[in-house]
Length: 238
Length: 399
Image (cartoon, rainbow over all chains, first blue to last red; front, side, top):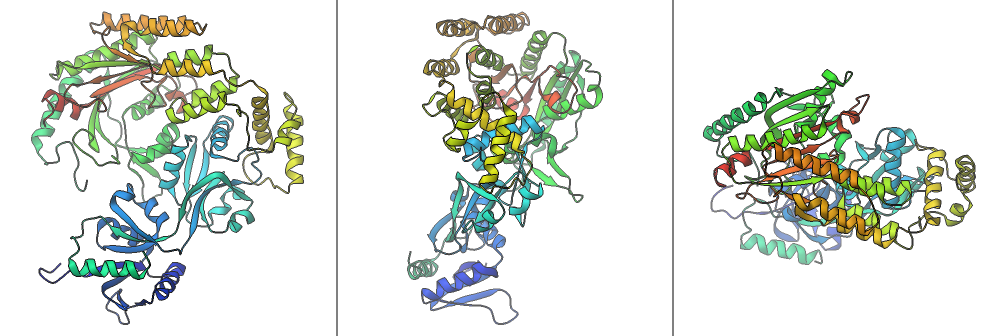
Protein backbone atom coordinates (compact mmCIF):
# COMPACT_ATOMS: atom_id res chain seq x y z
CA UNK A 1 0.00 0.00 0.00
CA UNK A 2 1.39 3.36 -0.96
CA UNK A 3 2.77 5.63 1.71
CA UNK A 4 0.87 8.80 2.42
CA UNK A 5 -2.27 8.53 0.29
CA UNK A 6 -5.22 7.60 2.47
CA UNK A 7 -6.36 4.00 2.50
CA UNK A 8 -9.79 3.68 0.86
CA UNK A 9 -12.45 1.79 2.77
CA UNK A 10 -12.92 -1.53 1.03
CA UNK A 11 -16.31 -3.29 1.12
CA UNK A 12 -16.58 -6.83 -0.23
CA UNK A 13 -19.97 -7.88 -1.61
CA UNK A 14 -21.13 -11.05 -3.39
CA UNK A 15 -20.32 -11.02 -7.10
CA UNK A 16 -23.11 -13.30 -8.21
CA UNK A 17 -26.22 -15.20 -7.29
CA UNK A 18 -29.33 -14.53 -5.31
CA UNK A 19 -27.53 -12.88 -2.42
CA UNK A 20 -25.96 -10.33 -4.79
CA UNK A 21 -29.42 -9.37 -6.06
CA UNK A 22 -30.69 -9.08 -2.51
CA UNK A 23 -27.75 -6.91 -1.48
CA UNK A 24 -28.39 -4.61 -4.44
CA UNK A 25 -32.05 -4.32 -3.53
CA UNK A 26 -31.20 -3.74 0.15
CA UNK A 27 -28.79 -0.96 -0.80
CA UNK A 28 -31.36 0.54 -3.18
CA UNK A 29 -33.86 0.75 -0.31
CA UNK A 30 -31.23 2.75 1.56
CA UNK A 31 -30.84 5.07 -1.42
CA UNK A 32 -27.51 3.58 -2.40
CA UNK A 33 -26.58 2.18 -5.80
CA UNK A 34 -23.87 -0.42 -6.13
CA UNK A 35 -21.96 0.54 -9.27
CA UNK A 36 -20.20 -2.38 -10.84
CA UNK A 37 -17.00 -1.94 -12.80
CA UNK A 38 -17.93 -1.29 -16.40
CA UNK A 39 -14.62 -2.13 -17.95
CA UNK A 40 -12.04 -4.88 -17.79
CA UNK A 41 -9.96 -3.26 -15.06
CA UNK A 42 -11.06 -5.75 -12.50
CA UNK A 43 -13.75 -6.20 -9.91
CA UNK A 44 -13.63 -2.86 -8.16
CA UNK A 45 -16.79 -0.79 -8.01
CA UNK A 46 -18.20 2.08 -5.98
CA UNK A 47 -21.37 3.17 -4.21
CA UNK A 48 -23.31 5.98 -5.82
CA UNK A 49 -24.44 8.33 -3.13
CA UNK A 50 -21.66 7.44 -0.73
CA UNK A 51 -18.13 8.67 -1.24
CA UNK A 52 -14.98 7.02 0.06
CA UNK A 53 -16.04 3.38 -0.23
CA UNK A 54 -14.53 1.06 -2.79
CA UNK A 55 -16.54 -2.07 -3.56
CA UNK A 56 -14.91 -5.38 -4.26
CA UNK A 57 -17.13 -7.99 -5.94
CA UNK A 58 -16.04 -11.41 -4.75
CA UNK A 59 -17.26 -14.97 -4.31
CA UNK A 60 -18.73 -15.77 -0.90
CA UNK A 61 -15.79 -17.89 0.21
CA UNK A 62 -13.36 -15.17 -0.87
CA UNK A 63 -15.28 -12.57 1.15
CA UNK A 64 -14.93 -14.73 4.25
CA UNK A 65 -11.23 -15.27 3.57
CA UNK A 66 -10.49 -11.57 3.05
CA UNK A 67 -12.44 -10.59 6.17
CA UNK A 68 -10.41 -13.10 8.14
CA UNK A 69 -7.09 -11.84 6.84
CA UNK A 70 -8.04 -8.17 6.89
CA UNK A 71 -7.54 -7.64 3.15
CA UNK A 72 -10.92 -5.92 3.18
CA UNK A 73 -12.17 -3.91 6.14
CA UNK A 74 -15.86 -4.52 5.51
CA UNK A 75 -17.82 -7.30 3.89
CA UNK A 76 -21.33 -8.62 3.38
CA UNK A 77 -22.00 -12.33 3.53
CA UNK A 78 -23.96 -14.97 5.41
CA UNK A 79 -23.23 -15.52 9.09
CA UNK A 80 -23.33 -19.29 8.46
CA UNK A 81 -20.39 -19.12 6.05
CA UNK A 82 -18.29 -17.10 8.48
CA UNK A 83 -19.02 -19.32 11.49
CA UNK A 84 -18.28 -22.41 9.42
CA UNK A 85 -15.03 -21.21 7.90
CA UNK A 86 -13.51 -19.16 10.72
CA UNK A 87 -12.48 -20.79 14.00
CA UNK A 88 -13.01 -18.28 16.80
CA UNK A 89 -15.13 -16.10 14.46
CA UNK A 90 -16.11 -13.45 17.03
CA UNK A 91 -12.49 -12.71 17.85
CA UNK A 92 -11.62 -12.14 14.21
CA UNK A 93 -14.74 -10.66 12.66
CA UNK A 94 -17.20 -8.15 14.07
CA UNK A 95 -20.84 -8.61 13.12
CA UNK A 96 -21.86 -4.98 12.65
CA UNK A 97 -25.41 -5.14 11.39
CA UNK A 98 -27.81 -7.88 10.25
CA UNK A 99 -29.30 -6.88 6.90
CA UNK A 100 -32.54 -8.84 6.94
CA UNK A 101 -31.66 -10.66 3.72
CA UNK A 102 -30.32 -14.10 2.95
CA UNK A 103 -32.20 -15.50 5.95
CA UNK A 104 -31.81 -19.23 6.47
CA UNK A 105 -31.50 -21.67 9.36
CA UNK A 106 -28.79 -24.30 9.66
CA UNK A 107 -30.65 -27.31 11.04
CA UNK A 108 -30.27 -30.96 12.03
CA UNK A 109 -32.81 -33.00 10.06
CA UNK A 110 -33.60 -36.71 10.36
CA UNK A 111 -35.90 -38.98 8.33
CA UNK A 112 -39.46 -38.20 9.44
CA UNK A 113 -40.13 -41.90 10.11
CA UNK A 114 -37.58 -41.83 12.97
CA UNK A 115 -40.41 -41.30 15.45
CA UNK A 116 -38.09 -42.29 18.30
CA UNK A 117 -35.88 -39.27 17.62
CA UNK A 118 -37.30 -35.81 18.31
CA UNK A 119 -34.51 -34.01 20.16
CA UNK A 120 -30.73 -33.91 20.18
CA UNK A 121 -30.78 -36.02 23.37
CA UNK A 122 -32.81 -38.73 21.68
CA UNK A 123 -30.56 -38.51 18.61
CA UNK A 124 -27.63 -39.21 20.92
CA UNK A 125 -29.36 -42.34 22.22
CA UNK A 126 -30.23 -43.48 18.71
CA UNK A 127 -26.65 -42.85 17.53
CA UNK A 128 -25.21 -44.97 20.34
CA UNK A 129 -27.62 -47.82 19.61
CA UNK A 130 -26.93 -47.50 15.88
CA UNK A 131 -23.20 -47.92 16.43
CA UNK A 132 -23.76 -50.99 18.58
CA UNK A 133 -26.15 -52.55 16.07
CA UNK A 134 -24.41 -51.69 12.78
CA UNK A 135 -20.81 -51.71 13.94
CA UNK A 136 -20.21 -48.27 12.47
CA UNK A 137 -21.03 -44.70 13.34
CA UNK A 138 -24.05 -42.89 11.91
CA UNK A 139 -23.19 -40.74 8.92
CA UNK A 140 -24.16 -37.08 8.85
CA UNK A 141 -24.11 -35.43 5.42
CA UNK A 142 -23.39 -31.70 5.43
CA UNK A 143 -21.33 -28.91 4.02
CA UNK A 144 -21.12 -27.42 7.54
CA UNK A 145 -18.42 -29.72 8.89
CA UNK A 146 -17.16 -27.37 11.61
CA UNK A 147 -20.52 -26.03 12.79
CA UNK A 148 -21.84 -29.59 13.02
CA UNK A 149 -18.84 -30.85 14.94
CA UNK A 150 -19.14 -28.06 17.52
CA UNK A 151 -22.92 -28.37 17.86
CA UNK A 152 -22.82 -32.15 18.25
CA UNK A 153 -20.00 -31.92 20.77
CA UNK A 154 -22.02 -29.40 22.79
CA UNK A 155 -24.85 -31.97 22.89
CA UNK A 156 -22.58 -34.84 23.89
CA UNK A 157 -23.02 -36.68 20.60
CA UNK A 158 -19.91 -38.63 19.68
CA UNK A 159 -21.11 -41.65 17.72
CA UNK A 160 -21.26 -40.14 14.26
CA UNK A 161 -19.10 -39.48 11.23
CA UNK A 162 -19.32 -36.55 8.87
CA UNK A 163 -19.72 -36.96 5.13
CA UNK A 164 -18.98 -33.82 3.20
CA UNK A 165 -21.84 -32.99 0.85
CA UNK A 166 -21.67 -30.04 -1.48
CA UNK A 167 -25.09 -30.31 -3.09
CA UNK A 168 -28.46 -32.06 -2.88
CA UNK A 169 -27.68 -32.92 0.72
CA UNK A 170 -31.37 -33.49 1.45
CA UNK A 171 -31.30 -36.61 -0.75
CA UNK A 172 -28.57 -38.34 1.25
CA UNK A 173 -30.74 -40.25 3.78
CA UNK A 174 -33.07 -41.72 1.16
CA UNK A 175 -30.17 -42.77 -1.06
CA UNK A 176 -28.37 -44.37 1.86
CA UNK A 177 -25.36 -42.04 1.56
CA UNK A 178 -25.96 -40.87 5.14
CA UNK A 179 -28.40 -41.43 8.00
CA UNK A 180 -29.19 -37.77 8.62
CA UNK A 181 -28.18 -34.31 7.47
CA UNK A 182 -27.25 -30.83 8.61
CA UNK A 183 -28.37 -28.35 6.00
CA UNK A 184 -29.65 -24.87 5.42
CA UNK A 185 -33.36 -24.26 5.08
CA UNK A 186 -35.62 -21.26 4.68
CA UNK A 187 -39.16 -22.64 4.67
CA UNK A 188 -38.47 -26.30 5.40
CA UNK A 189 -40.37 -27.29 2.26
CA UNK A 190 -37.42 -29.02 0.59
CA UNK A 191 -36.69 -31.01 3.73
CA UNK A 192 -40.32 -32.02 4.02
CA UNK A 193 -40.49 -33.03 0.37
CA UNK A 194 -37.55 -35.32 1.02
CA UNK A 195 -39.21 -36.98 3.99
CA UNK A 196 -37.06 -35.19 6.57
CA UNK A 197 -37.93 -33.48 9.86
CA UNK A 198 -36.00 -30.86 11.82
CA UNK A 199 -35.25 -31.84 15.43
CA UNK A 200 -37.02 -29.74 18.10
CA UNK A 201 -33.77 -28.32 19.42
CA UNK A 202 -31.90 -28.91 16.16
CA UNK A 203 -31.62 -25.33 14.94
CA UNK A 204 -27.88 -24.75 15.00
CA UNK A 205 -27.88 -21.22 13.70
CA UNK A 206 -30.41 -18.67 12.52
CA UNK A 207 -28.35 -17.08 9.83
CA UNK A 208 -28.74 -13.99 7.68
CA UNK A 209 -26.46 -11.75 5.68
CA UNK A 210 -24.56 -9.32 7.89
CA UNK A 211 -22.45 -6.27 7.33
CA UNK A 212 -19.22 -7.34 8.98
CA UNK A 213 -15.90 -5.77 9.83
CA UNK A 214 -12.55 -7.50 9.94
CA UNK A 215 -10.65 -7.34 13.21
CA UNK A 216 -7.68 -8.57 11.19
CA UNK A 217 -4.36 -7.17 10.12
CA UNK A 218 -5.58 -4.24 8.01
CA UNK A 219 -4.16 -0.87 9.08
CA UNK A 220 -6.46 1.12 11.36
CA UNK A 221 -8.97 3.21 9.49
CA UNK A 222 -7.98 6.83 8.95
CA UNK A 223 -10.43 9.64 9.62
CA UNK A 224 -11.92 9.62 6.12
CA UNK A 225 -12.41 5.85 6.10
CA UNK A 226 -13.95 5.92 9.57
CA UNK A 227 -16.37 8.60 8.43
CA UNK A 228 -17.27 6.55 5.34
CA UNK A 229 -17.86 3.47 7.49
CA UNK A 230 -20.08 5.43 9.87
CA UNK A 231 -22.03 6.86 6.94
CA UNK A 232 -22.57 3.42 5.41
CA UNK A 233 -23.82 2.02 8.72
CA UNK A 234 -26.15 4.98 9.17
CA UNK A 235 -27.59 4.64 5.68
CA UNK A 236 -28.18 0.89 6.20
CA UNK A 237 -30.09 1.71 9.34
CA UNK A 238 -27.65 0.37 11.94
CA UNK B 1 -1.42 -15.03 15.00
CA UNK B 2 0.06 -18.46 14.52
CA UNK B 3 1.34 -18.08 10.99
CA UNK B 4 4.51 -19.81 9.98
CA UNK B 5 6.43 -22.13 12.28
CA UNK B 6 4.92 -22.66 15.64
CA UNK B 7 7.24 -25.11 17.28
CA UNK B 8 8.18 -24.65 20.88
CA UNK B 9 10.65 -21.87 20.45
CA UNK B 10 9.66 -20.62 17.01
CA UNK B 11 13.05 -18.99 16.53
CA UNK B 12 14.24 -21.63 14.10
CA UNK B 13 17.22 -22.30 16.33
CA UNK B 14 18.92 -25.64 15.79
CA UNK B 15 20.19 -25.56 19.38
CA UNK B 16 16.72 -26.30 20.77
CA UNK B 17 16.27 -29.24 18.38
CA UNK B 18 19.74 -30.53 19.23
CA UNK B 19 18.90 -30.38 22.94
CA UNK B 20 15.66 -32.27 22.26
CA UNK B 21 17.50 -34.91 20.24
CA UNK B 22 20.04 -35.34 23.02
CA UNK B 23 17.26 -35.69 25.59
CA UNK B 24 15.36 -38.14 23.36
CA UNK B 25 18.44 -40.34 22.98
CA UNK B 26 18.71 -40.56 26.78
CA UNK B 27 15.00 -41.39 27.16
CA UNK B 28 15.06 -44.00 24.40
CA UNK B 29 18.09 -45.63 26.01
CA UNK B 30 16.09 -46.07 29.23
CA UNK B 31 13.22 -47.71 27.34
CA UNK B 32 15.43 -49.88 25.15
CA UNK B 33 17.43 -51.11 28.16
CA UNK B 34 14.15 -52.33 29.67
CA UNK B 35 13.48 -54.40 26.56
CA UNK B 36 11.18 -52.12 24.59
CA UNK B 37 11.74 -52.33 20.83
CA UNK B 38 12.14 -48.97 19.05
CA UNK B 39 9.55 -48.43 16.30
CA UNK B 40 9.08 -45.58 13.82
CA UNK B 41 5.42 -45.32 12.71
CA UNK B 42 4.44 -43.29 9.64
CA UNK B 43 3.91 -39.58 10.20
CA UNK B 44 1.04 -39.55 7.69
CA UNK B 45 -1.70 -41.88 8.91
CA UNK B 46 -5.10 -42.88 7.50
CA UNK B 47 -7.62 -40.48 9.07
CA UNK B 48 -10.25 -43.19 9.11
CA UNK B 49 -8.64 -45.19 11.89
CA UNK B 50 -8.45 -42.15 14.16
CA UNK B 51 -11.94 -40.94 13.26
CA UNK B 52 -13.41 -44.37 13.99
CA UNK B 53 -11.64 -44.60 17.32
CA UNK B 54 -11.86 -41.03 18.52
CA UNK B 55 -14.77 -39.64 16.49
CA UNK B 56 -15.27 -36.37 14.69
CA UNK B 57 -13.93 -34.41 17.67
CA UNK B 58 -10.58 -35.41 16.22
CA UNK B 59 -11.02 -32.94 13.36
CA UNK B 60 -11.07 -30.11 15.88
CA UNK B 61 -7.49 -30.78 16.91
CA UNK B 62 -5.90 -32.66 14.05
CA UNK B 63 -4.61 -31.79 10.59
CA UNK B 64 -6.87 -33.88 8.35
CA UNK B 65 -6.45 -33.64 4.60
CA UNK B 66 -7.05 -35.45 1.31
CA UNK B 67 -4.37 -36.60 -1.07
CA UNK B 68 -4.76 -36.26 -4.87
CA UNK B 69 -6.25 -39.75 -4.92
CA UNK B 70 -9.03 -38.68 -2.56
CA UNK B 71 -7.82 -40.70 0.43
CA UNK B 72 -8.47 -38.99 3.76
CA UNK B 73 -5.25 -38.75 5.75
CA UNK B 74 -3.95 -36.99 8.83
CA UNK B 75 -0.72 -35.91 10.42
CA UNK B 76 -0.52 -38.26 13.40
CA UNK B 77 -2.00 -36.57 16.50
CA UNK B 78 -0.47 -39.15 18.82
CA UNK B 79 1.77 -42.20 18.68
CA UNK B 80 -0.32 -44.65 20.67
CA UNK B 81 -2.74 -45.38 17.84
CA UNK B 82 0.06 -45.74 15.23
CA UNK B 83 1.89 -48.07 17.65
CA UNK B 84 -1.30 -50.10 18.11
CA UNK B 85 -1.65 -50.30 14.32
CA UNK B 86 1.84 -51.75 14.10
CA UNK B 87 1.00 -54.26 16.82
CA UNK B 88 -2.22 -55.17 15.04
CA UNK B 89 -0.40 -55.68 11.72
CA UNK B 90 2.35 -57.82 13.25
CA UNK B 91 0.62 -59.68 16.07
CA UNK B 92 -3.08 -59.10 15.57
CA UNK B 93 -3.66 -62.71 14.59
CA UNK B 94 -1.58 -64.35 17.31
CA UNK B 95 -2.14 -61.95 20.20
CA UNK B 96 1.53 -62.32 21.13
CA UNK B 97 3.19 -60.02 23.65
CA UNK B 98 5.00 -56.96 22.28
CA UNK B 99 6.72 -53.96 23.85
CA UNK B 100 7.46 -50.90 21.73
CA UNK B 101 9.08 -47.53 22.35
CA UNK B 102 9.25 -44.49 20.08
CA UNK B 103 10.31 -40.89 19.78
CA UNK B 104 8.75 -38.79 17.07
CA UNK B 105 6.96 -35.64 16.10
CA UNK B 106 3.18 -35.36 16.41
CA UNK B 107 0.81 -32.61 15.28
CA UNK B 108 -2.11 -30.95 17.03
CA UNK B 109 -4.17 -27.98 15.95
CA UNK B 110 -4.39 -25.51 18.84
CA UNK B 111 -7.70 -23.73 18.57
CA UNK B 112 -6.65 -20.87 20.83
CA UNK B 113 -3.34 -20.41 19.07
CA UNK B 114 -0.12 -22.32 19.52
CA UNK B 115 2.33 -21.27 22.20
CA UNK B 116 5.38 -22.61 23.91
CA UNK B 117 3.49 -24.97 26.25
CA UNK B 118 0.96 -25.93 23.57
CA UNK B 119 2.92 -26.19 20.34
CA UNK B 120 1.22 -27.44 17.21
CA UNK B 121 4.07 -29.79 16.46
CA UNK B 122 6.11 -31.49 19.14
CA UNK B 123 7.89 -34.74 19.89
CA UNK B 124 6.55 -37.55 22.00
CA UNK B 125 8.79 -40.19 23.50
CA UNK B 126 6.84 -43.10 24.79
CA UNK B 127 6.39 -46.79 25.37
CA UNK B 128 3.53 -49.23 24.83
CA UNK B 129 3.13 -52.72 26.22
CA UNK B 130 0.72 -55.09 24.47
CA UNK B 131 -0.75 -58.38 25.70
CA UNK B 132 1.36 -58.57 28.85
CA UNK B 133 0.31 -61.62 30.87
CA UNK B 134 0.50 -59.64 34.13
CA UNK B 135 -1.37 -56.34 33.59
CA UNK B 136 -0.65 -54.79 37.00
CA UNK B 137 3.05 -55.51 36.67
CA UNK B 138 3.05 -53.98 33.16
CA UNK B 139 1.38 -50.85 34.54
CA UNK B 140 3.91 -50.52 37.35
CA UNK B 141 6.73 -50.93 34.87
CA UNK B 142 5.36 -48.28 32.51
CA UNK B 143 5.02 -45.77 35.37
CA UNK B 144 8.47 -46.56 36.71
CA UNK B 145 10.15 -46.28 33.29
CA UNK B 146 8.34 -43.03 32.48
CA UNK B 147 9.59 -41.51 35.74
CA UNK B 148 13.07 -42.92 35.24
CA UNK B 149 13.19 -41.34 31.78
CA UNK B 150 12.07 -38.00 33.19
CA UNK B 151 14.71 -38.18 35.91
CA UNK B 152 17.37 -39.18 33.40
CA UNK B 153 16.49 -36.05 31.41
CA UNK B 154 17.38 -34.05 34.50
CA UNK B 155 14.05 -33.22 36.11
CA UNK B 156 14.12 -33.90 39.85
CA UNK B 157 10.95 -32.22 41.11
CA UNK B 158 7.64 -33.40 39.75
CA UNK B 159 4.28 -34.59 40.96
CA UNK B 160 2.46 -37.79 40.06
CA UNK B 161 -1.27 -37.78 39.49
CA UNK B 162 -3.17 -41.08 39.26
CA UNK B 163 -6.69 -42.31 38.58
CA UNK B 164 -8.53 -45.48 37.69
CA UNK B 165 -11.39 -45.66 35.20
CA UNK B 166 -11.94 -49.22 36.45
CA UNK B 167 -13.25 -47.98 39.81
CA UNK B 168 -15.99 -46.00 38.07
CA UNK B 169 -16.91 -49.03 35.97
CA UNK B 170 -17.06 -51.12 39.16
CA UNK B 171 -19.36 -48.57 40.84
CA UNK B 172 -21.60 -48.44 37.80
CA UNK B 173 -21.78 -52.23 37.69
CA UNK B 174 -22.60 -52.48 41.41
CA UNK B 175 -25.40 -49.91 41.47
CA UNK B 176 -28.90 -51.23 40.89
CA UNK B 177 -30.44 -49.84 37.69
CA UNK B 178 -31.69 -51.08 34.32
CA UNK B 179 -28.84 -52.36 32.17
CA UNK B 180 -29.59 -49.89 29.34
CA UNK B 181 -29.17 -46.94 31.77
CA UNK B 182 -25.82 -48.34 32.83
CA UNK B 183 -24.81 -48.53 29.18
CA UNK B 184 -25.85 -44.91 28.63
CA UNK B 185 -23.92 -43.66 31.67
CA UNK B 186 -20.87 -45.70 30.74
CA UNK B 187 -21.02 -44.23 27.27
CA UNK B 188 -21.38 -40.63 28.46
CA UNK B 189 -18.75 -40.91 31.18
CA UNK B 190 -16.24 -39.37 28.75
CA UNK B 191 -18.30 -36.22 28.30
CA UNK B 192 -18.80 -34.80 31.82
CA UNK B 193 -21.53 -32.37 30.77
CA UNK B 194 -23.53 -35.01 28.93
CA UNK B 195 -22.97 -37.44 31.82
CA UNK B 196 -24.45 -34.93 34.24
CA UNK B 197 -27.42 -34.33 31.94
CA UNK B 198 -27.94 -38.06 31.58
CA UNK B 199 -27.98 -38.52 35.39
CA UNK B 200 -30.40 -35.62 35.74
CA UNK B 201 -32.72 -37.08 33.12
CA UNK B 202 -32.70 -40.60 34.56
CA UNK B 203 -33.38 -39.29 38.06
CA UNK B 204 -35.94 -36.70 37.00
CA UNK B 205 -39.72 -37.02 37.05
CA UNK B 206 -39.83 -37.35 33.26
CA UNK B 207 -37.08 -39.90 32.77
CA UNK B 208 -39.07 -41.52 29.98
CA UNK B 209 -39.28 -39.98 26.54
CA UNK B 210 -41.62 -37.01 26.52
CA UNK B 211 -41.03 -36.24 22.86
CA UNK B 212 -42.35 -39.40 21.27
CA UNK B 213 -46.06 -40.14 20.70
CA UNK B 214 -47.26 -41.14 24.18
CA UNK B 215 -50.27 -43.06 22.95
CA UNK B 216 -47.99 -45.20 20.82
CA UNK B 217 -45.58 -45.82 23.71
CA UNK B 218 -48.48 -46.92 25.89
CA UNK B 219 -49.50 -49.54 23.33
CA UNK B 220 -46.08 -51.21 23.00
CA UNK B 221 -46.04 -54.63 24.69
CA UNK B 222 -43.12 -55.03 27.06
CA UNK B 223 -40.78 -57.90 26.18
CA UNK B 224 -42.42 -58.58 22.81
CA UNK B 225 -40.23 -56.89 20.19
CA UNK B 226 -41.92 -58.56 17.19
CA UNK B 227 -45.36 -57.31 18.19
CA UNK B 228 -43.92 -53.87 18.96
CA UNK B 229 -42.40 -53.78 15.48
CA UNK B 230 -45.78 -54.54 13.89
CA UNK B 231 -47.49 -51.82 15.93
CA UNK B 232 -44.82 -49.28 14.99
CA UNK B 233 -45.04 -50.26 11.32
CA UNK B 234 -48.80 -49.71 11.42
CA UNK B 235 -48.33 -46.35 13.14
CA UNK B 236 -45.89 -45.21 10.44
CA UNK B 237 -48.28 -46.36 7.75
CA UNK B 238 -51.25 -44.56 9.27
CA UNK B 239 -49.25 -41.34 9.51
CA UNK B 240 -47.97 -41.52 5.96
CA UNK B 241 -44.35 -41.90 7.08
CA UNK B 242 -42.29 -43.76 4.51
CA UNK B 243 -39.34 -45.85 5.58
CA UNK B 244 -36.55 -44.60 3.35
CA UNK B 245 -33.16 -44.94 4.97
CA UNK B 246 -30.80 -47.35 6.66
CA UNK B 247 -32.53 -47.53 10.06
CA UNK B 248 -35.10 -50.30 10.05
CA UNK B 249 -38.52 -50.30 11.68
CA UNK B 250 -37.22 -53.07 13.94
CA UNK B 251 -34.49 -50.74 15.18
CA UNK B 252 -36.89 -47.88 15.83
CA UNK B 253 -39.36 -50.20 17.56
CA UNK B 254 -36.59 -51.59 19.79
CA UNK B 255 -35.62 -48.07 20.85
CA UNK B 256 -39.25 -47.10 21.49
CA UNK B 257 -39.75 -50.25 23.53
CA UNK B 258 -36.82 -49.27 25.72
CA UNK B 259 -38.27 -45.79 26.10
CA UNK B 260 -41.60 -47.30 27.10
CA UNK B 261 -39.84 -49.45 29.70
CA UNK B 262 -37.95 -46.39 30.94
CA UNK B 263 -41.24 -44.56 31.38
CA UNK B 264 -42.53 -47.34 33.61
CA UNK B 265 -39.31 -47.89 35.55
CA UNK B 266 -38.93 -45.93 38.78
CA UNK B 267 -36.59 -42.95 38.39
CA UNK B 268 -32.95 -43.36 39.39
CA UNK B 269 -32.91 -42.51 43.13
CA UNK B 270 -31.30 -39.20 44.06
CA UNK B 271 -28.91 -40.96 46.43
CA UNK B 272 -27.33 -42.76 43.46
CA UNK B 273 -26.80 -39.45 41.70
CA UNK B 274 -25.21 -38.24 44.94
CA UNK B 275 -22.99 -41.33 45.03
CA UNK B 276 -21.60 -40.67 41.54
CA UNK B 277 -21.12 -36.99 42.24
CA UNK B 278 -19.42 -37.66 45.56
CA UNK B 279 -17.19 -40.30 43.97
CA UNK B 280 -16.15 -38.11 41.04
CA UNK B 281 -15.19 -35.28 43.40
CA UNK B 282 -12.80 -37.43 45.47
CA UNK B 283 -9.24 -36.10 45.56
CA UNK B 284 -6.87 -37.70 48.03
CA UNK B 285 -3.32 -38.98 48.40
CA UNK B 286 -3.17 -42.28 46.51
CA UNK B 287 -2.47 -44.20 49.72
CA UNK B 288 -5.77 -42.98 51.20
CA UNK B 289 -7.84 -43.24 48.01
CA UNK B 290 -9.26 -46.72 48.40
CA UNK B 291 -10.26 -46.04 52.02
CA UNK B 292 -12.23 -42.97 50.90
CA UNK B 293 -13.94 -44.89 48.10
CA UNK B 294 -14.60 -47.87 50.36
CA UNK B 295 -16.24 -45.62 52.99
CA UNK B 296 -18.37 -43.90 50.38
CA UNK B 297 -19.55 -47.12 48.75
CA UNK B 298 -20.20 -48.71 52.17
CA UNK B 299 -22.49 -45.78 53.02
CA UNK B 300 -24.45 -46.69 49.91
CA UNK B 301 -24.42 -50.41 50.66
CA UNK B 302 -22.23 -51.16 47.67
CA UNK B 303 -19.30 -53.53 47.58
CA UNK B 304 -16.52 -52.98 45.04
CA UNK B 305 -13.80 -54.71 47.03
CA UNK B 306 -12.30 -56.48 44.01
CA UNK B 307 -11.67 -53.23 42.12
CA UNK B 308 -10.28 -51.53 45.23
CA UNK B 309 -7.95 -54.43 45.98
CA UNK B 310 -6.69 -54.33 42.40
CA UNK B 311 -5.98 -50.62 42.81
CA UNK B 312 -4.02 -51.18 46.03
CA UNK B 313 -2.13 -54.15 44.60
CA UNK B 314 -1.04 -51.99 41.67
CA UNK B 315 0.07 -49.20 44.02
CA UNK B 316 2.20 -51.70 45.90
CA UNK B 317 3.82 -52.85 42.65
CA UNK B 318 4.53 -49.26 41.61
CA UNK B 319 6.02 -48.56 45.05
CA UNK B 320 8.16 -51.69 44.74
CA UNK B 321 9.64 -50.15 41.58
CA UNK B 322 10.96 -47.34 43.79
CA UNK B 323 8.26 -44.78 43.00
CA UNK B 324 6.91 -42.60 45.81
CA UNK B 325 3.36 -43.40 44.82
CA UNK B 326 1.84 -43.07 48.30
CA UNK B 327 2.09 -39.31 47.96
CA UNK B 328 0.78 -39.25 44.41
CA UNK B 329 -2.50 -37.42 44.07
CA UNK B 330 -5.51 -39.57 43.26
CA UNK B 331 -8.53 -37.97 41.63
CA UNK B 332 -11.56 -39.99 40.69
CA UNK B 333 -12.51 -37.79 37.73
CA UNK B 334 -9.08 -37.99 36.15
CA UNK B 335 -8.73 -39.76 32.78
CA UNK B 336 -12.11 -38.83 31.36
CA UNK B 337 -10.60 -37.12 28.32
CA UNK B 338 -9.49 -40.06 26.19
CA UNK B 339 -12.25 -42.50 25.46
CA UNK B 340 -9.85 -45.36 24.85
CA UNK B 341 -8.60 -45.46 28.44
CA UNK B 342 -10.07 -48.41 30.30
CA UNK B 343 -8.36 -48.63 33.69
CA UNK B 344 -5.32 -47.16 35.42
CA UNK B 345 -4.31 -43.66 34.27
CA UNK B 346 -1.50 -41.33 35.36
CA UNK B 347 0.18 -38.07 34.48
CA UNK B 348 3.32 -36.26 35.58
CA UNK B 349 3.21 -32.57 36.46
CA UNK B 350 6.17 -30.21 36.70
CA UNK B 351 6.11 -27.23 39.09
CA UNK B 352 7.48 -24.95 36.35
CA UNK B 353 4.50 -25.66 34.09
CA UNK B 354 0.79 -25.19 34.52
CA UNK B 355 -1.48 -27.96 35.80
CA UNK B 356 -3.17 -28.17 32.39
CA UNK B 357 0.10 -28.94 30.61
CA UNK B 358 1.48 -32.20 32.05
CA UNK B 359 4.90 -33.33 30.85
CA UNK B 360 3.78 -36.89 30.38
CA UNK B 361 1.16 -39.48 31.10
CA UNK B 362 -0.62 -42.57 29.98
CA UNK B 363 -2.69 -45.48 31.08
CA UNK B 364 -4.41 -48.71 30.29
CA UNK B 365 -6.39 -49.05 27.05
CA UNK B 366 -7.65 -52.61 26.75
CA UNK B 367 -10.25 -52.03 24.04
CA UNK B 368 -8.25 -50.06 21.49
CA UNK B 369 -6.64 -52.89 19.54
CA UNK B 370 -9.91 -54.81 19.41
CA UNK B 371 -11.71 -51.70 18.15
CA UNK B 372 -9.12 -51.60 15.36
CA UNK B 373 -10.17 -55.05 14.24
CA UNK B 374 -8.30 -57.55 16.38
CA UNK B 375 -10.22 -60.76 16.84
CA UNK B 376 -9.94 -60.62 20.64
CA UNK B 377 -9.34 -57.96 23.32
CA UNK B 378 -5.66 -57.13 23.70
CA UNK B 379 -4.68 -55.76 27.12
CA UNK B 380 -2.44 -52.75 26.62
CA UNK B 381 -0.83 -50.02 28.66
CA UNK B 382 1.44 -47.20 27.63
CA UNK B 383 2.68 -43.71 28.30
CA UNK B 384 4.19 -40.80 26.42
CA UNK B 385 6.40 -37.89 27.42
CA UNK B 386 5.82 -34.45 25.91
CA UNK B 387 9.51 -33.90 25.30
CA UNK B 388 9.35 -30.15 24.62
CA UNK B 389 7.57 -29.57 27.93
CA UNK B 390 10.04 -31.83 29.69
CA UNK B 391 12.99 -29.85 28.35
CA UNK B 392 11.23 -26.61 29.30
CA UNK B 393 10.65 -27.93 32.81
CA UNK B 394 14.26 -29.06 33.13
CA UNK B 395 15.26 -25.52 32.24
CA UNK B 396 12.89 -24.01 34.79
CA UNK B 397 10.26 -22.95 32.28
CA UNK B 398 12.49 -21.09 29.80
CA UNK B 399 13.54 -22.51 26.41
